[in-house]
Length: 353
Length: 287
Image (cartoon, rainbow over all chains, first blue to last red; front, side, top):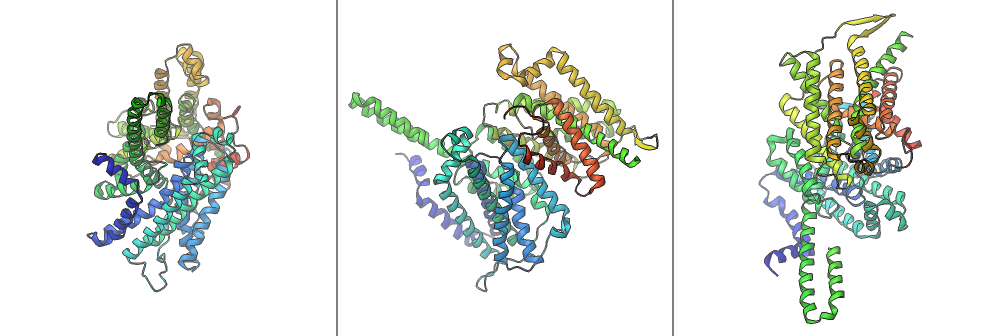
């Protein structure tokens, strides 16, 4: 047990999660200016959307390129209802989540009949249709002008969400809830079914998993995440335009997901935080950030396809397996007869890790 | 009637360019089973290369086209060597993400160097022909003739030459091609070079009646994907027929229905067709 091992073990404990939440709660007190809090709140909102993408792409293995479109659907549903129809923020917020789920269901039923490349291309087209509709349907969406004066979340007279810090805590709450839900899904029978589908459609089907129903469910979950994140985004930024639906945002989210670790629980959060702060520190690159991110995506998929969290888990798994192998070997020396069984169980443990 | 014929001409122009771009995409898909999302960016780079050689170096239109085809072919081969070849055993999702990475990189690079503004590419063929009461810009005639003769040349190359046959063989059956001693690396590089060259020529033909800007490949690549899904991925005649279908649908839809929504027509068509027949129009067998 060296120090490295102890640290890596600590990362896996519940105490680590509490420490992370505590750090997030204390962040506004140590931040040097309000802008940093604002950036952090924005990053939390994006992270929620990336968690949605992780469900359909990371767990279920279907590359959904319409994700940014559903983010925009959430933002626009909230804004249109709140600004043009005078709905209260939270009612409009619920409606935005509902719209994301409903439209996600409709898009999912059609697009999930396609597999792999066809699905990716089809959803790219769906995302583009969403963008074109938002840009051209002026009667509904105000077209290229966008929507301004979007109300902030209603604090019922207790909190003022037009201030950055209260909104920060709101975004944090929603993000923690999203991660909790994502963890529950990933560890449930449902999450296991999704993973079986990712490995192979045929395998999943032979296990008695209803492919279509599970894929559509994963898709609807992910679009709901995206539209809830979009609605929060509208409440934070307070003005939106057709640019929110541009496919670039989907590519941004893929970058976050890939850097953090696709299919892992903490990957989306770590990826979003890392890239957001990297972009902030490279402000001069804002317009040209893709010059860095484009090659980074390529290098990541070639050399570190599992991202930060995935690579950490693999490394830890290897160490554990090696430790177990060493243990088994010393045990085998004492009792030569037990050799076979011990070795095979150690290898199995290695596989699981 | 004249207006109708004008739309036929428009459809033919659009369709031949779409066909040319889709052809490159479908060739690469047939060989490597990679949906090359970077293809639109290659098309865009092709337009910029011929723009720069023509405007900044004052080179002749045709020489600029050849230069663009050469540069983009080289770029495509480079992508294959550096990115797609190392990823050939990776899960399919990785290829797609890597292709997106290349696309983002090329676009940002061009935007940094030349800015995001729209440019107009000059062409020596500005006269307007008058045939049977129809006004036909010479550039459109050039596009249609150029695109279709290029398709014919490609067809002859694939069917009549040994090198071309190796590409067809790879597309038909990978293992079979290996068994008869076809070098996979060579075929993959050649296919990427051809597809890049086609994209650059398409861009040089089309850009004078359109505009040159960093995002010019976005819409086109998505339409090209629609086309190869309609035509069956990897199918060469499918790409040409699909290109014409989308070209005509856009020309007539834009004229008779609404110009605002003409870009949506291709995608709406895709959604409708795939909802009814998830395997595409011309695909044979199962995917």
